[in-house]
Length: 368
Image 1: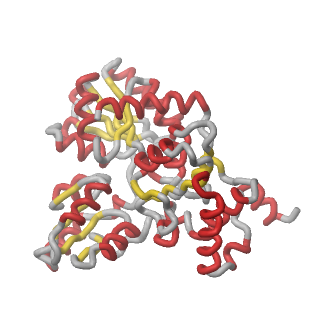
Image 2 (image 1 turned 120 degrees about the vertical axis):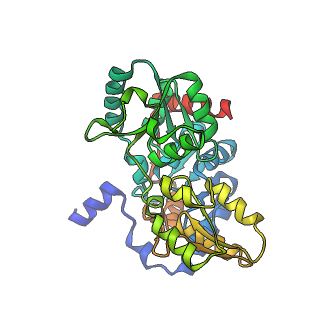
């Protein structure tokens, strides 16, 4: 076996034939396999996926929404999740043992989810417990690994989405005096601030320095934010807003709460992906919108709402690089392997981890 073959075997690299096929050939084969496998195949596609992939999605949506739809689709034995790793994990957690979840490209990760390592999180929890005692409840954004969801579940906490974060944070503060918010500091900060908690009562936990970054009295802190962020949404800046305001005075600015506090504060609207989509659907024809979220979605919204002007808040923005690893060749490869009875890249969460992660998800669903 040569070196390239060894690498392919270890990392399940896509065979060259898929990179040599034409777009038309690949699209035709995907249609044929979908027709052949029928209801036993289900393809959920996240909003941030490329058009070449999303055209074949049986459902589109946010990560948790797609996992829930997959779980309700009992006829689907093969779920080819077009998203990133943590999304496929959530789908595996919620689906039955008879349903198998696959990720077309195992390199499709999420930098934000990867910023909350379970070993670092457990070490941080021990240190924070030594400082604050039993006064902290953990919350995790659904954009986190199964291990982090399980950690939150076994420690009495809940998951949150960008849509329900305010409700969950309000609930958490009835349970304990403080919150440890994983892994996205911006969603945690924006949510807490909107609920009236001052920035002086928030601090960032740096897992590498192993300490809270603050100039305040640490006993006055209520919101302990993990030092994590979305690499896409953090690239929207105050300067982007200043430029839009100076050049396009009638343009409305709408951003995702994974953006920084400064960007959210200067925008006209902020909310989840679903909120952004709904706002543009309801907007009057002729209105102008600068959107602070992932570029594939912004471009799709611009095409759908061609009676309005829709642009990216950051004209230099590129699509989410890890999400973009799921492309038409990888989708076809995954489907052909299923058709041949030799599926690849199955996502399987250990039973104990799944059971503890479900605790965090169930608490969230019980609250909202």
